Length: 186
Image (tube, rainbow, N blue to C red; front, top):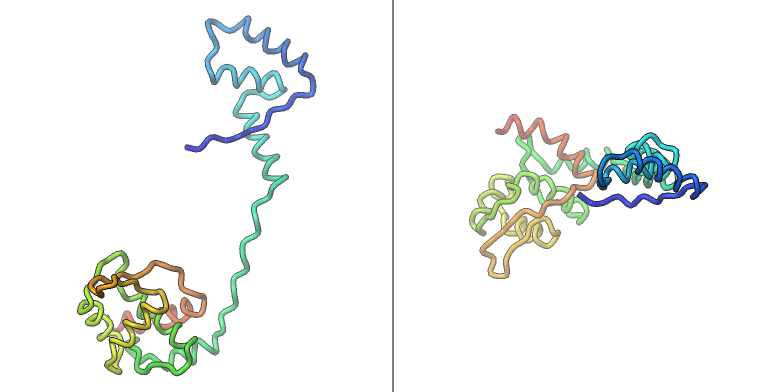
């Protein structure tokens, strides 16, 4: 667990010293770490150290609010509908799109069907890709997935792995539209 850094300030150091002196006189035996923290907090006007930490944390959040979340990009539903034309009723890719950005988005669908954190041979990934499309060019798909950074491969092409990444919003929308087709095909 990482240690919190809390600044400690008191308006009157003399009052703090008097408070500490009286608390130490009434304390039995040597004071431990937590006892000293509680004494310092009481000397500064708090009930105990937990009360002090809660106040300090709340003040820090007021002074340093968390950054606003990044805006979610809009999904172009017209584009997603156009991309759906590249897939059949079973969710298989029926043609390779001409446009690069359409190719990239369609590859995310194939990427989502590859097993996560699993090593595949060249023949293994080729067999998987072969059932995901109908135009019979698994080598093109495999090569494009590597070039797009969706799949990694060793220099000797013996080991392929899906690279875990967050798909872009258009690809997520396409996956949502294709999900019912994939359930029927399964």
